[in-house]
Image 1 (tube, helix red, strand yellow):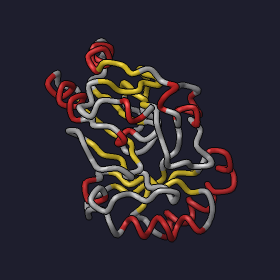
Image 2 (image 1 turned 45 degrees about the vertical axis):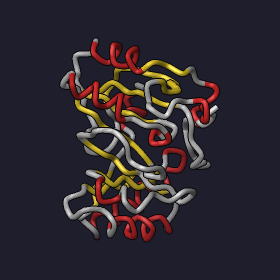
Image 3 (image 1 turned 60 degrees about the vertical axis):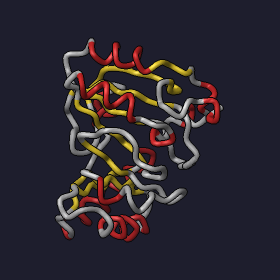
Length: 207
């Protein structure tokens, strides 16, 4: 259970780890080692990794083992995702990765306090549990999932909360992308501060 996980972040509920190509957002196309942590209470109905939600299903893993595996990869970048990775203290893990000259990226809803040492923060806010206000200005990238027309107005509300240099992305939710992609294309044409993010790893059929 979540409460059994040590506060110092030396053990984390590891769902999976794999070396692949980043498929979304600013770093799309870049080789990276993905660390997916179990545990999430944000509860997006369209989430494609619902098996990550229950942290108790995933083994508590020493961060030394995770770091050792990441070090073996030629690409020196790690993406920590979930679930919701900020449910845990990520300072110990990211400090050790940075000592080894491995870049640290996080994908988060921002619903929990920010911990860790980061080269890049991708904030993907969710309606079901809002980001903490203090996380928004720290984001290098705002990635909003578009499921229906009302999401554009919602995306603009978060564009006002991030820094002026934050990259802004609209990403179609995969299951109804055939409906939302035309809407996103027109929106970006009319609002060019935004760019389109696609889940290219799904087109490439890679993890």
